[in-house]
Length: 269
Picture 1: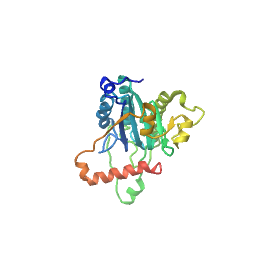
Picture 2: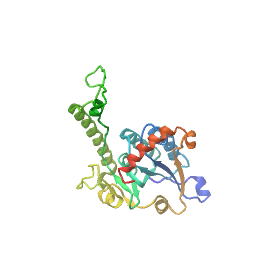
Picture 3: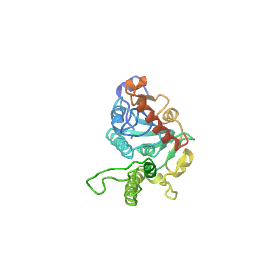
Picture 4: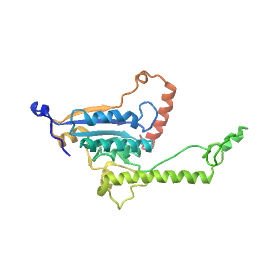
């Protein structure tokens, strides 16, 4: 999977080109600055097309988020890699966990810093319940539906075991899809004797032993060692909306920041 240098590169004695895509933050279909298939699609298209790259590198720093967006992004990466016959390297920074690892697993090789966090192959759903609080306030919950299961897991009503069981089935099915993806991408490199699909996460050296990563290292020196000292690395990333650069929509930004902090906090960040 090595592309030959273009005639221009050979004449100018230039080294091979690697396009590096930066992915930082929570994976979500909505919210400014979030990682999503919609925001990454044009970035990935350019990275795989422009300059006849020998490879595409992914610099990943994400605690996860939406399973669907993670799957869409990983699928897009694989389609583009196969279409352009380009190898994909993933470089983990602070963390590639949950959906972040889902995306990393789309690469042909995963490289991480010694203290990077990887794994958390699982699915989580959370909420709150306040039926007693609403009763103490003297409030009555009124909700009307057509369809027996239309109103599920209402936080202002006592928890319904049937609703919980139904949600658990959905989570289990999502978890199986995650496991299938990791098995398909990591294959024989996985340590099948270890419990790696429990939602646990590890530092890079242990992740390598488990088959979830391939090597310790950083993007620039690793790419130079692989493609030569003359390798040219071109950076690509998601552009922030113009107005958000000036701190507008502060209330929405504050809510997003609180949610983002909760995601990172799971990994001690």
